[in-house]
Length: 193
Image 1 (tube, helix red, strand yellow):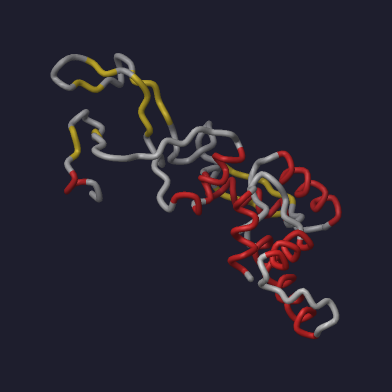
Image 2 (cartoon, rainbow, N blue to C red):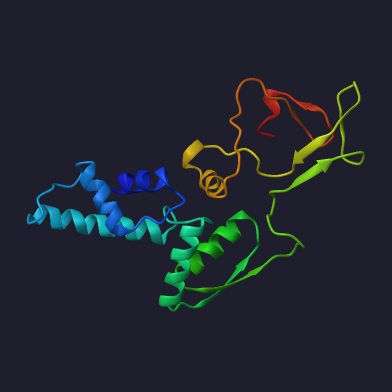
């Protein structure tokens, strides 16, 4: 039941998945018996309720930045009175935590030591000051100084956020050359160091 609800939401992560929609999707997939009057059906609906509540509360479904999700979260915030929470750090984890806490009805303040949000995720232009050389001259472009590769494909939370924000993701295939901060090529044996 849990996995079916997860996959149902991940088919359209830009929309809020209601408990009723989750139950309907399970009926269509024949995970729940179509007999409305049976005790098994009521027990299965209770299981759907518990699984949906857990997945929503802990941010496995119905999270993110799409307009539909934000609207649903806002209406939930208005109806639930929560406490006040301070989140330390405006990196991706801090921002995601703050968003989830707000969706549960809490007031949130984020404290960040830097002058920008994003934590380790940062992209800089490569120019005269930050250029790489390959023996043939300068290579210009952009450089990612933090998290730039999403492992886990379609199941990664950042993949879902990128999809909600209509961001383009490029699948890495074949031989990819990586460079260290000095502009030297990193060999395959040095990837984890």
